Every structure is written in C-alpha cells, then in structure tokens.
Length: 233
Image (tube, rainbow, N blue to C red; front, side, top):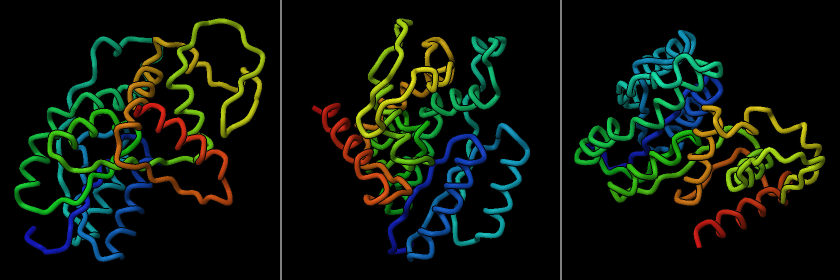
C-alpha cells in the first residue's frame, strides 16, 4: 500500500441496496485513478449480501479489502417485536466504532488516506473515527435529496404522539401525516433510534454525496444545506 496515489476508504453498512451502491461507487473511483480500500463485515444479514461482496472483491484485485467482525447483535432487542435482522445489524454496525478505529488507525500508518466515505447509517460512529484520526469523513447517501431533506428535518423533530393532519417540510413540501412510516412515529423502534442518531451525525461530516443534480432537486438540496448549516452553529 505504498502507492503515491491517495487512498479512499469506503465503509458501507447493511442492506443489499446500500452495499451495491458502495460497490458501484468503488468501481467508479478506481476508474478515476484513485486507490480504494473496501471495508467489509465478515457477517451479513443475508447470504446474498455476502455473495456480492465476495464476488466483487475477488474480481477486483485493484481494490484492497479490509475485513472486520462487528459487535454482536444487541440482546436487549433480540426478542423485540420489531427486531428485524436488518435493524439489528444496523445497530450492531453503528456500535462497532471501537472495533473499526484500531484497524483504520493501523491502515493509516501504511497508506496516505485522503478520506473516508461511509454510509448514512454509520454517520455518527464514522465521524467519531474520522475525528480521532484527523481524516475527513464524507457520507454517501443511497436515496434522493428530497428523502434526505425529509430525514434531516425528522431527526430534529421528536414525535410526541399529537395528531397532525398535514406535515410541511422545507424542500419536500406538504403531505398527509399518514404518509410517514409508522416506525418513525415510534421513538422506541430500533430503526428510529438508529436513524435519529446517524441523521444528527450528518452535520459533523465533511460533506454528503447524493446521486442527483441541482436541476432535479434544487429546492431539496438548498433545504439540506440550510438545515446542516443551522445544526453546525
């Protein structure tokens, strides 16, 4: 790993759509002449996720893999009625920064790391890691700017159970309250707690990468910028 080219460390989370996004992004970065380290967990939610990761890394010798074992699933949620394996894995990954930090710290002694690019569901923990190593961390978001505008707004608005007919969100517009997924109205739901923690971590990132353009989602992008600037103040 003594190449003079800078290294970009990609840190995906769980879920096929998130993993595939990082795989495609890794391929794009390599085509632009940069070195890539792909951080992969030895345990995944599904065998399909594991298959895609192994197939990708075995067919991409120019990409350096970094394997790690995340922390075990939280037993406090294992028998909860909302304990979907995907949610449990997201929670485990977000709690595994103390596992990742020494591995990435050792990596930084061997290569010139220009940046981390991590998944939205690792925003909080990877910002902690990045700040410890004085390396910028960017968030790669897998959905639209409009969805991110919704998420950043919702992360700063605690649900209180009061009935609301209509919700207005800058950059998103107005829509009936029943369009909000029920899990986001439950502050005790595992997905909600993980989402809120990582959404708040967005304001600490060096930047956010979204697959969009200004002419498509100008209003949503502006709303995100205003919200994150406000959170940083």
